[in-house]
Image (tube, rainbow, N blue to C red; front, side):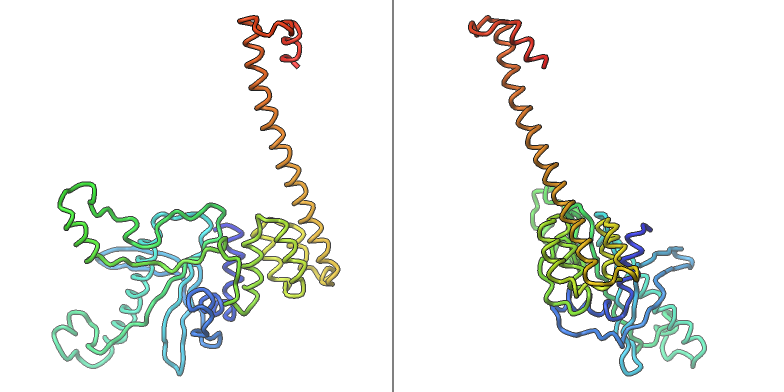
Length: 318
């Protein structure tokens, strides 16, 4: 696990931010999940029996409890790179969590009264037993555009190009569950009004990381909203040492944010100079291409009689 991934995982493990992450991204700002209802659970899911031995790990896992009863289990998968198998990966992790819940109930039931029916005996689950819903959110913060699947159908071959019986692919699509994944792309978030914690500032700054002018303008306007921990995480994600250093005690005054902004402005200027240089190189290449045509014409055909071959050779070598 990379340093950036660990940093983001630790930052989002705060119950208030975790609730805000779900409420802001999935529930459009409605306060469906409360921080005081959340508690961390084991992020490792495993299955070991005669059928299979499997182990998978989530980045963050929390259960929501109200009035002493578990309501749901909320899982987070942080992604820096595109995973083309994401729907299957999410399905497996959620299935393992359901399997863990079943195993927990079976262990409890073996110490209780005999089963009422043969079905309960075979499954070792009571007829009225219920599992807690499991939901996964994929948080993507990579640089590359996400071109991976966002639902199971995206990676299934229904055979449209293999048969003339078009009713078969249509039927398959109808009866195979689509299994969409909940997906949050941090690069596409220009407005985060549905978030109410530090996530709003972090996400809006991160979405502007490659547009230095917008980034510095936003940072300057919202300097009072950027706490030291958020600044550290942002510095890790955008590789800014100045943002990371802003967490030290001697640099917590507001004026120190000016140094951060200055550094980013200088980065922007340097980037502008690099862009200008690239444009100049492209222009020179085009000129050289045209000049090469002239050179070839003079050398081979004596077409340009007002320019000597020696002059052309001299400038061409230059």
